[in-house]
Image (cartoon, rainbow, N blue to C red; front, side):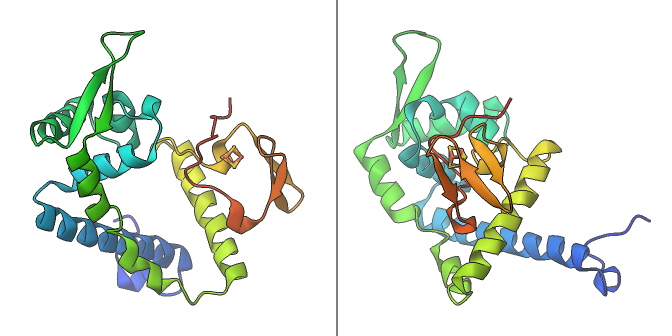
Length: 201
Ligand code: SF4
């Protein structure tokens, strides 16, 4: 049998396995918090994620095809969730002037209210990292973004709007430089979800 990250015996003396197993635990915490909020609000976890995404992203990203890519779901699955949100009066779809087959999704006032209740669902996790010194947080962020970039390159996770896959990013010795912002970036200034991101060729 192949080595498993979930085998406690295999984990002993193997930090790689323990790191991946730890990330799985964190993702479990994220899922639990999301489900708790979904139960309170009476909508599904993916519906919450769609509403929160729409709140914080520009119109060209608020389309079924983009959402499917963002959440690694099929277009029919996202269409179903969007239809349900529309029936609940939480979103409206607007036809694009330039392409009548394309729709952008917008929050209604009721949708904005739900987002106000739901957007902080992961905040209980913040206290767990509050006591890590700032410099160590920067290193942790840099390392995590590096792992995410490799997973993206391997096709395991979807496209990320992050520095390491951005055409404006440049390694600057041991540091980082953004050619869009024209400035060096400390580790802690690296971005995971950047509005100015453009995919590197
Ligand atoms: S534009 Fe944004 S994602 Fe790209 S390098 Fe600059 S800060 Fe990073």
